[in-house]
Length: 392
Image (tube, rainbow, N blue to C red; front, side, top):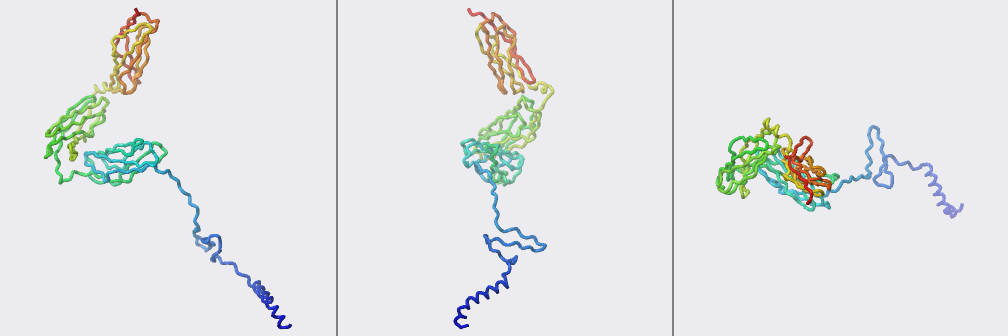
């Protein structure tokens, strides 16, 4: 073959040789540990090793987002720390940063120390803050509580409670380097009362350089027992206070009653030693104190004529019964009628209309009465007179 012709066939022969080599040695499959191209650069083939659990895929999975209601307001308190002395009172300011909610916010203190009480508060619609009063009993222990919070609740029960940041409540004794301006004590160690009764108590002040007014209050009285605030005037060392037991007061003995005195400049507050107030019940009182009432008609004589009407007032003297009373007028003359009335709970006077129709005849009844009825008691008024006279 001529050399020129061989040169022309050389490229074709080279291609045939290469194809033959490829068929004899096909490319091997990628090994298990070899990276496999894919749409994600983080995807890898699983490696199966006997006795070893394959790790979870590192590929990010979709995250389910939890949805919660957004707080309707944020609470802030001041001052922090808040200071109290045993037997004393103070106020905490609670402010609400409203986030579109304009309704009422009920407030309640949590995690208070022992013997420290806090009133519940309410931030009314349109307002942003309120003061809550805290009081410490005479036996409150000195120390700090740094996890006290205020919980706020919107009027809608479906809304979650909102908590203020924790603040510190510090119960402190009067510093020894600050001598008190006065001391208080109560004359006598025990006071006894009967329900509906009264008793006097004498509070004495020993002054140590303070000659101004001292406001005196009694704390920890039994239920339904009260005492009005009194004032030791400037230079005065003795004041009489009156303790009153309500008719509903139950048998009770309180041994931790004490007097709290506050200087007029509010820079000094002192607590007396404890004394005892006891409410006693006698057998006679138990009988008398059963829930009851009396009735009385204000008008002794009522004048009517056929076709006319008149109003009368019926008064209830309640004796340990605060509930409703149905009032009915009985023993009226013929063709004279009375409206029924109800004395609502706590109400003492009802107005009743007496009306004579056109058929009423001249008549005088002297035994007319008002009858009052409750669930467990019935009482009637003294008799009064109803006179029907023909028109002239």
